[in-house]
Image 1 (cartoon, rainbow, N blue to C red):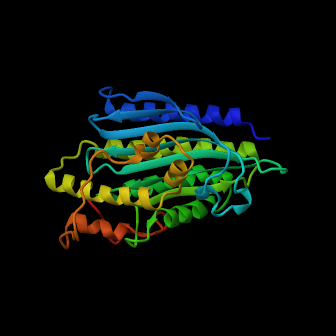
Image 2: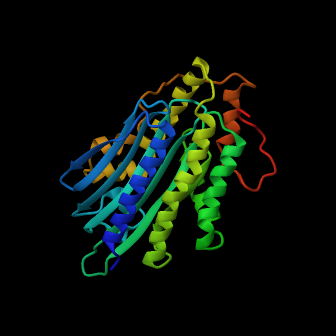
Image 3: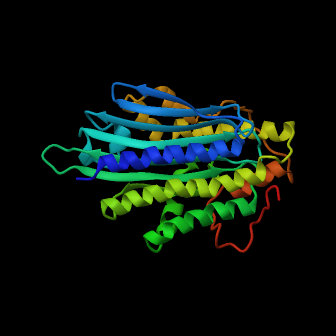
Length: 310
């Protein structure tokens, strides 16, 4: 049997580590407020930072739930587990900065175990992280992906490439024909290694998120911006809402399993703007974003076709 207490310890430690790293970017001016909750399925702790100098809203959520039957969203590709009791735990976060030059970021690490009747328990890990810039900088994207590649390297050849491709495929808005951002890592059904190795990989992903994101925030948080950049940021946040409500399996799992709605929808941006048939002015910094919203070999290309805000 996998050690669920060890998973809980790693997840709570990651929540503490990530919140401390994000608060450090605020310089002591804003802090996360913890909201411990209990639902019919389990317990959790949502930590939210609002209206900081750097982060307009940042949420880092821990949850530990149990259910009598796996919801449809979790068994669509594993029908043999339909109706099985389950236990799920994870840390999920979405960060919405004030400054349009600081990208939005998301990370998630999670553990599932199902108990099909008359069979051995089935367990797996999932998670990853991805970056959603509005005014992309090449050096930030390379740093993000290099950090992802480095954390994957000890776990075997080709792990980064596999999970990078999976991220590109998953965080894709089919109705818009564009990626949500510039990708990162995404994986699910992870039990390819022994339990302890899989758990160590989860720990590395959580730590790698901080190593990848904090330097980007530090470089961009003081860049000057005006109303044009802010309007574009709010418009592009609409894509984030579209993905989370239409395509995201985690959102569907939480809602279908009867999870805590406030925590599930913590990923929504505090402000967002929708505009009918918006088209950026040709040649503008806003128009250059389009070249980044497709799968690319960020570490292998000699140079990008567009240089974003550089």
